[in-house]
Length: 441
Image 1 (cartoon, rainbow, N blue to C red):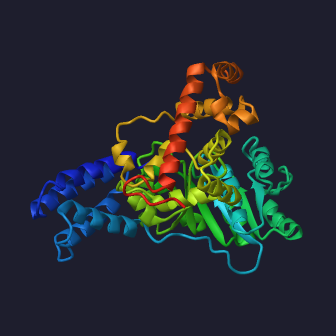
Image 2: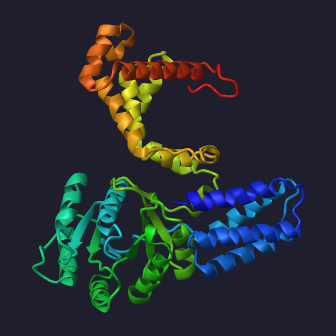
Image 3: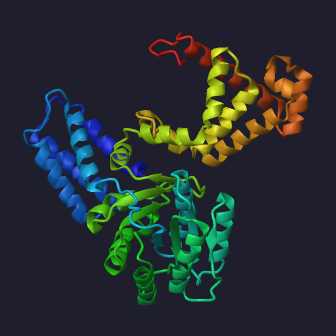
């Protein structure tokens, strides 16, 4: 989402890095570029003004370090002020007597129902027993969509199929939740194409009757500056406790994330990416600031790896590597685990320095996914013996595998070459033969 803003800011810092000393004229020029970059990224103009003023005060003050060059000094200051603007990391406040009610609000099309499923899955992974409530009785198939999501992640869904009004549905769901032993109840409320009095009156009625511990606005990051106005409108009417920004992996310019916290005073608690139910991550302002400035986000990458990789499989893989074993079945297992972590271009952008090197390089996610499926098809077309011992794959066997996987012999050969290269690299890493790299185990 922040690719355009990140590129503009990095260009500013690169030009500044050619100077040996940070002069006041340089500061003025840099601040002008930063202001334009933020405005073009849809950041609220009042937020931009306040941000630039704070950066100026530090850049021309006595806080500059002699150990850093001009570009590094400004990057450090901008990073600090971005973190300040984005605010403290918001966390769910599940306190008091269970069940805890979390009320999701937002406009139609913001991804509210999918976010309910993502949040339920996230809460269960943290040891809770959530239940989702279909409180949207207006949108066609809204109840069915939530029920389908519930079956996918094995989480109960309460619905009344529109027999009573939404406020009563939410009240009844609390009793149902207690009977089921659910400690968190997620209310998927109705949305509209735009804010109206009827919708707000219904949300206020629900809030007054169930007293939720959290009222979270699900906002589409693609709406840009309008998302800030939407957040302000909901906050004034129902009193938000947090924000969830969805579709942050899209081509939005990123200004909403920077503006919403500053304008509304409401913390961002989660960021939603993609349609997969694992695509929800807690909001960390320092990590997001690092990504905006092209500094990567290794902590988020590590956390995704921890969630995607099975601990037992990881231990078994370590043991195999110690013994110098790594066959095509292992290759396929690792491929599947990496695919669980998310889109390749998103993962590469989290690696410090790599995003800058890949600037201008188009990563076709659809084509990449198709290639990975071909790799999987080729390996699955082999016999168990062939996967464990690829050396026996002669010409006739490769032709059979190509026909069975719907690929060509050339593609099979390419896969085997990639496998051998990876195996060789892993062996060298494990033996500490690559200069500057430690042994893996």
